[in-house]
Length: 343
Image (tube, rainbow, N blue to C red):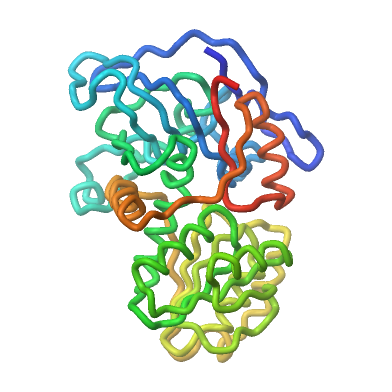
C-alpha cells in the first residue's frame, strides 16, 4: 500500500515536506480488528502538533490521520460486526481499556490507556489501515466519503464542545477560531438551537465573511467587542490571546470551553494580562475538551445526517498531504481539508 509516513519531528515553517510517500506492506487485522481500504481522510490541526512535536507520537515512524472513511476489506479472528465492503469511519479514539472508572462511566476519553489514531498507532494517511471493530462507525448513506471524513473529528469534537458549553436555545454563543470544527458547530447550532445567535471571532476577513455566509449574527477580529455579552464561547485556536479575550466577552456565569489539544508558548504573555475582575469574576468558568468518546462520534453522525449538515471541503490527493498541512498551518483554509486515495 501507499502511505504518507512521518519519520521525523520538524517545524513546518521551515520544512514543507515532513511526510514521505512510501510503499509499505498491507497491514494485517489482529483479533477483533477490521482491515479498512481507505478512500478519504480529513486533515486536522492535531497532525501539525504531531509533526512539530507538541503532541509527539510515542514512536516513529508513524502514519498520521484520524478522520478516516473507507470500506471493510477483511476481518481478524473474532471480528463479526461489519460485512466485507461495508462503509465505516474511524475517529481520534482508536481504543481505550474499557475497564477503568472513566470507561465504565462513559468518559473513555479520559482513560489512561486511551490510544489516538494516527499518533499512538498508524492512521489513515494511507491506502489501508486496521482498527478494533468496536471503534469503527457505520457511515450514514446521507454523506459521501469526502463529506463524512471531517465529521469524524472536527464535527464530533465540536459536538462535544457544544455539550460542555451547557447551551440552551436563545443563549448567545461565541466561536473563536473558524476552521473545520468551528464551521460545523455553527451549522449544528442552527439545527439544535434555532433561536441562538452565534458570534464569530476570526483573524482574517475571509474567515469572517465565511462565517457570515453560514449564518453568523456577527463576525469580527479577536480584539473586537461583539454587540452583546455571551453565555459561552468555544475556543478552537492554538493560541492564548483568543482565550483571554473570550473571557472578557462572557456574561456573568458564562463559560469558556477550550477545544484545543495544546496552546502555543509563543503568546504566553497574554496570560499575564489576565485581570481577575474583568476576566474571571462573577462566576465565569473555564472548561477544557479532552479527546472524544465513541458516543460523541456516533451521536454527531446521527444528528448531522438528520439535519443535512455538510462540511465545506477542500480536496487533495494523498500524495499532497504535505501541501495540505502547510496550507492549514498558514491558515489557508475554508472549512475542512480532505485527502483522497486513488488520485
